[in-house]
Image (cartoon, rainbow, N blue to C red; front, side):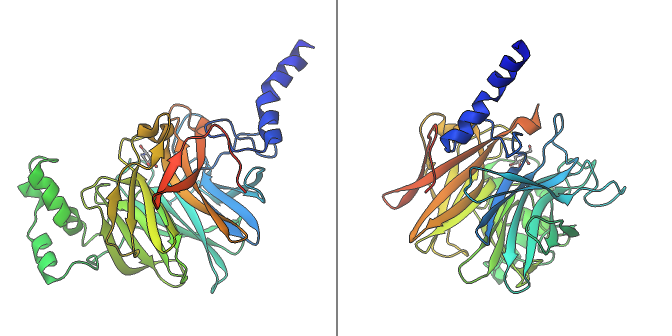
Length: 371
Ligand code: DGJ
């Protein structure tokens, strides 16, 4: 009897969540089987009327990838079916995605021409900390996978950003790491802005860490990632099959130290929300806008409002999901509350984006419903 009562008490919050049919950020989010959803640093793809949520599988005691990328599906963004592992790490020693690597922030987009689902993610090779700074690409014919790993590498080897003309290339080429004994001085920051790290990594490829993907209205897709030791964001155009970089890329907020990019487009304006770089600890969100994906990008104040607004409510951005009903579109800001000591217990923040004076605002709500 006591056991049964204990079980009922244990399950009560789950039942309340499902019955209320509301989104409650920071709580346990049970899937259809009653297990907390394990899809962190994730993103969502809508395909044929179903939402597919892809994210990092997190284990009990380590943030390294022991399983891979998980996939959940839902029709209403509230009830989630566990579709299993979309991309598995492997036991093969020395493989790019060997079990124990760091595999973060997976995102999937659908290519209408090739009819393939294309997954990109941040990859760090096993045993190398965060030094590899690569992106990985995998592909599948079905949204839920299994995905076939294609390759991983650094970005845009041997290519300057599109805004670099002869003068900028000459100025970047004149910069040398050895001339800067100390980081974070005004001179060093100026040099970073002019491409100190772009030049350093020119031959081997640009670093690629926290990332997202974005498909524009014209079908062109972009990979947006923290590069240059997380000091500068890069936006790189993808090839038509969404499996490679086309070679065209731009830098956003040089030396601005941004991570966790999440992007959406509203009424022709591109909006990007990012975080600062404080590891697993939350910090104040940043926001940028641009009239074109190629910029110019302008920084705005923190869009968050409410308790812990100066710490992104305890979370870090990961994705912004447009949800449409009739002629209305709502944008959902998605973030992760990391729990590095118990990674699988990390929580999710989903909040609707409102507009005030034409600018996005993310206001804390204990619970809310999509339309
Ligand atoms: C912050 C990043 O946004 C996360 O994805 C992860 O890489 C952690 N840093 C690791 O400290």
